[in-house]
Figure 1: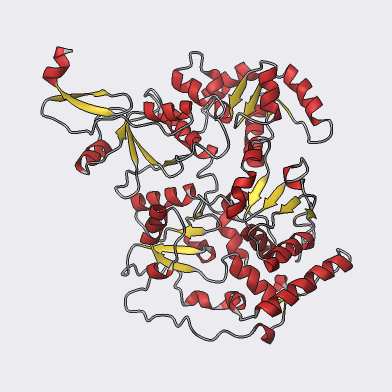
Figure 2: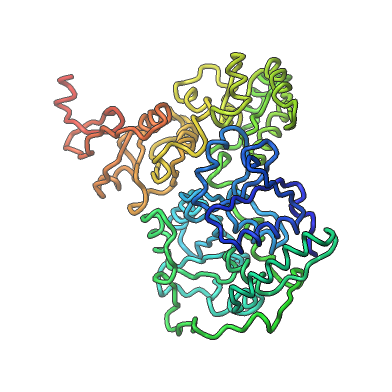
Amino acid sequence: MRQHSLYASMQCVVHPTELEAVELVALESCLRDGGATLLTDASAATGSAVTHIVCHPKSYETFVEQRNERFVALVRPEWVFRTFLLQQLLPVDRFSPNPALIFSTLAISAGTMEKDPRKVMNGLISHYGGQIVDHNDVARGATHILYRDESSDDAAMVEPEAEQEGDEKLLQVHFSKTDLGRSVDAWRQHLSSQSLDSTFSLPSCVVAYMGQHAGLSKQHHVKYTWIEDCVMRQSRVLEGPFDHRPTGSSAVNVDKKKRNWKTQPKVQLDDLNFGKYAQVYQHGKTELGTELSVVRKLSNEKLKAIKKALQGAIVLLAQHISPLLRQKLSDMLKTVDAKVANVPLGDSYQEIVGKVVMNASFVVCRYRGGFEYNEAVRQDKKVVSVYWVLAGLVQVRKPTSFNEAIQRPVRSFGGIPGMHSQVITLSGYSSQSSPTREELQIAIHATGACLLPVLSRTHSTHLLCHDATGEKYKRALSWRFDNVLSHKWVFACLSKWGACCRRCVPVQRQQGAVWRYGRYGIRWRSEEEAWQK
């Protein structure tokens, strides 16, 4: 059923820059039809009322700075069109307008790939903003399905020809720009003149336009090299040259004449079977690429120690932390009997926060910004990162330099400039090493770099080794891998908030050699040289 309260809790700004006129009207009509409040004041995007900003990727940088202050959902137009067609809200982080997230808005299935290649693909998809589709039973809702090569025939996978049937055909109807403009304008006029209870019968050309814009009109079947090319170029490339065709299959006639939208001029959303597109988010791994993906579940022993340290403590969570993460932190703190202060936004917000900070044991921040952070610094209160809570660092009595590095909020939203394209793999770290594997994973995530569990000759840019042993290390040597570094490099980047120079000597093992750390790298020297020291 059409929901006129789908967006009822949202205060939205649709940023017009780079949007076409018909796109802007369609977006505003979707939001109004779903009950959103549209903020049109010139300063609304930077005000305290806005909850969602819809913008083109080229306008993303306009709103980055304010994300240090408080959380505002930044989404692409595709999020609005897709949620409206599905009549269901979807995770905003999978529709980020950040142009660096080249797979944003896409839901991608790695198909029948083997374990290690799948880990590589899933790691890259998630890091670059895409939604992983791991279950074959919901693969029909994916925007892309990957294949290893032309011979990858799998009866369990969805074939391109089969997906041409059903409701997708409605999204492929032909319409002119004139017809679309008139239909969208009629929708706008209806919303302006009629009550909210009156439902506008959507013209099929408008539904087709939104479906095409949202990426629902065609499921792409591509070779996995499409992912590799996108990552190499740091942009989404056209799928055509990477189309997968099963052995012996004939090409689909893509030039087949489309039927005109006027053959079915009106459409009811209730009659469309688009539920499969929502299922990929319900069953998908939504935690990958987030703070929760790098933190292990706390043991009962750790929880008891944390409870002893935090019982009765007053904790304030910064407004710039995303709602889902705030809820996770709040639930965890309440589990150990801490008191979580919840200060609603309003005219007296800053005054109330000042009083709460005065009585708070500590303030949890994701970034070094926002009123809560500034007030805590002014009052000389303890400020800790979200990882300090999630990883249970509160119960560490003698923190190492690695503990201290990750228990501080990071410098700013968006990660270290230039680090997003770095793909890092670990070797030799465990829960007993120093730093631990978890601490290093947290540090890498905090920089904004990609953490890949498998060493990929194509994609891994850095291998961090605890010592000069192990299969990954040997493989890196055989590949003449350039960036074999110490973990100190990541912590140096985090401290400097910039990509530090490697300053490492290429690793070339000599007979009878022993290893030691360079400043950030691992290099070999002979035993004779070692004893001379």
